[in-house]
Length: 322
Ligand SMILES: Cc1cc2nc3c(=O)[nH]c(=O)nc-3n(C[C@H](O)[C@H](O)[C@H](O)COP(=O)(O)OP(=O)(O)OC[C@H]3O[C@@H](n4cnc5c(N)ncnc54)[C@H](O)[C@@H]3O)c2cc1C
Image (cartoon, rainbow, N blue to C red; front, side, top):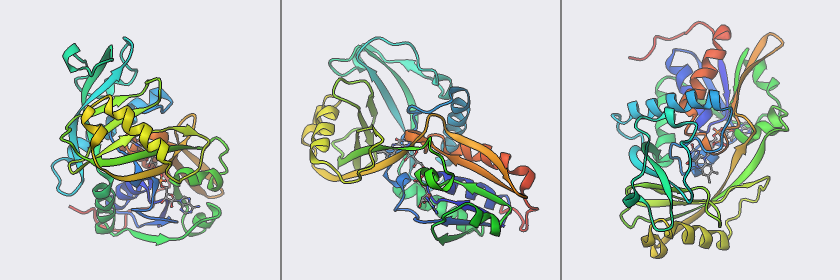
């Protein structure tokens, strides 16, 4: 038996890998989709302020590949979209450009008014309304079990299993006694899609962050990023600011009917924690602290986490599903 603590994108991805390798796995989690931070995510592939660079680039590249492979499966909610990463001043290429194929400079005719440059590439957009249930279904099909319970200590899980994966997102602050974790409040606005097919991103506007993520029937507009703020109530003035900034990227958004205002707390950390800690006779593998890029890094981090647990993996009980 292996216990995975947490049922967001990190826990589910680890749990799917373990269960499909033939292990007996239980997810123990306070909440399950749709009540996780992972559900809130705009969820386009982008290594947004995550470190350390040398590990992030590999995790991001692996996840990009896995999302592409999943395109052929129905019901995943994954689609590829062009991205325009926009800048007000000329800039050098981002450090993670090698993680995506065909990262290129945008032509002047591809820039909205007021922008001096930018980069274009194609990236997965993951509709979490479909993707998280898809992962849950894969996990269940591989024989995985889900128990809704809140842990006060990881030792509770170690009593059940010598191998525990801690994928508790912001909950790892108390569960892993990690003072380095902090909330980064993010607000989003969902609007009717006025016909946008491209992800638009302006990270460096003088009034704040702006991004537009098309999801077929609606667009997700972001956003805000407030470190150390854990207030989850949407603020009308934030929504107005988000719509105003996004309308500078595509003016049709100024009048697009609003559907919802949503707030989530990113699990901020100076560096993502993917590491193993022996405790007694057991092993805890941590996979949390992905900030604003937990979907972007999900497969790469989960594959590394599972590899870290390999020495403690019990023999698979079932045949691997075909
Ligand atoms: C506004 C916003 C926009 C975002 N946009 C993007 C984006 O475009 N692209 C991207 O890649 N990422 C994005 N993110 C970031 C992404 O949402 C997170 O990095 C990711 O969801 C973290 O996943 P997780 O599984 O670690 O955490 P969570 O989804 O928070 O899951 C943690 C799980 O652990 C459980 N848990 C916690 N404590 C305990 C406990 N004590 N006992 C039992 N269970 C416990 C919880 O119930 C939950 O099931 C965004 C986030 C926000 C808020």
